[in-house]
Image (cartoon, rainbow, N blue to C red):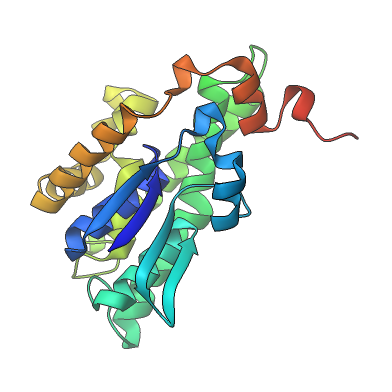
Length: 237
C-alpha cells in the first residue's frame, strides 16, 4: 500500500495517474496547501521542502520508504513496477530526458505564468508577458516532438507523457481556446491520454481531493502570502 499526500495541482495529478496506470493500491491523505497544511511538523518530516506530492511506500527498499518531488516519484514507481520506463538503452533515456523537459522547463515556466496571471497585483505586465512567451515556446517544442513521434519518449507511452499531460491539458484554460488550434499534434495527444481508463479514474480522484482542500480562490491572504513567500514572509534584503 502506498500513502499519497496530495492536493489537486498538476504536479500531484502526475502521481495519481501513475498509480492508476501502474495498478498500485494507494490511500490519499489530502494536504490543504492553501490552509498551510504543508508547513505542519508532521508533513515537514515527510518533506522538509514543504511541497506535495509525497508518497510513503510500505514495501519500499529496506522497508517503509518516503519519496518526494514528482519526477523522483515517477521514476521510483516506474522502476518498482517495471512499467512506463524501459529498463535500459536509448528508450529509457529518451523518456527520462523528455520528462526532465517537463520538470525543468514546462513546470517552472507554466507555474510562473499561472502565478503572475492569477495572483500577482496589477502592474506586472513584463512578468506576465515573459512567462506567457515561455509557455508558448514550450508548446512549440512539444508540437515538434509529437510531429516526429507518437509519444514524448518515442514509440511508447511513458512517464514522460504522464509528467507532461497534467500541465499541457490546460492549454485552453491558460491561453484561451483559440490557442488549441495552433497545436493540433499536442491536442490530439492530450485527447488520447485523457481517454485512457486509468487517466479517467485518476482525474476523478483528483476532483475528489479538491473537495477536501481549500481552493486558491477561497484562500486567505495570509495563507497565500506564506505559500508564495510574499508579504510578511518575504526574505529581508
